[in-house]
Image (cartoon, rainbow, N blue to C red; front, side, top):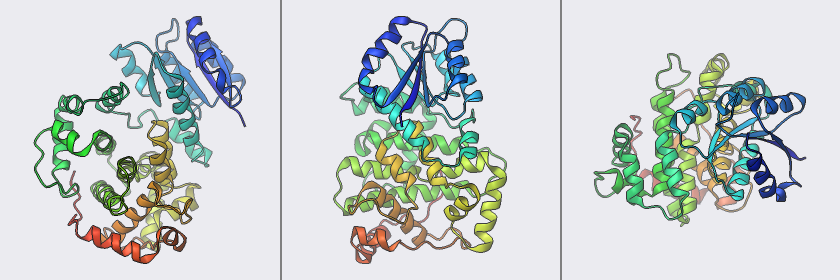
Length: 404
């Protein structure tokens, strides 16, 4: 089934350029074009639109106002901002109602991949009522400025670790948190890291970027009055699972991309719990009450009460943000019992890393213990392989740390 994309820009030449550039996508997309925000809303009132790509500076109704209207009136439509302006004020105004922000000129490959991945992510959430609730949220944790600046630097081709480190160093609070984490047991480095530039060189840009994102997400939910679970415990669990994923990837001699993707997915695998707890509060209180009194798995009770799990919700958000497909898929499948491949892929690493942390660090005695699914064990080499990973994890001396 074709997907429908709406492009909104007040400059006819820009719209014509988009039509020419995206001509190869005609078999997969129905593309609509509007010269103003008002025209775009009229089109959307008449038919369903999967994603909208809007310019920011337009006369009358500007981009941020248009995207806010789309968020309110069509919450299931994915929202992209596309602008050649570096005006910080208008970018700031567009952050809340925008899933991703792309800069002009935008190459065809970048635009197509971003749109396809975001639309694929939406399909991870089958419960439309929960999808609508999440899609309407103005205060989803937005991608932090440091993350965006690093991403823009990476897009230039051959980024300098020192320059990336300099970007991180400009944010004093973020630098302090990163250095604290890098020097903790979770990373197990043989020497002390004293500067963000060193951290980038030692750990790599992708790992540093994922740490920035994780710190930002958890910070966004820190001041909530009520929570169905302990935020420090969830943070500690996420950090340990990331360290375990890195250990498994090393044991399996995975390449750097797979190792980095496994680490990132493991670090972010439970972000869906934060979203559900913040925006489906009553349902989550009931879910965790059942989990604790009936000794059941969180994901099983979520599926029963909501028709989806935190894994799917987290993958949905990360997909909208444009994280790598391997990361999104691993987050979505970190509770799945059936393997999709007979290979030790990123999803398998995150699945087993999560299991091992639950087995080794019992941080809630009333949660059901999760056993490895036989099919997933068989696909990666059986219990002997699992025990070898476990022994490797025990040697890490992670200690169940919880502090941020």
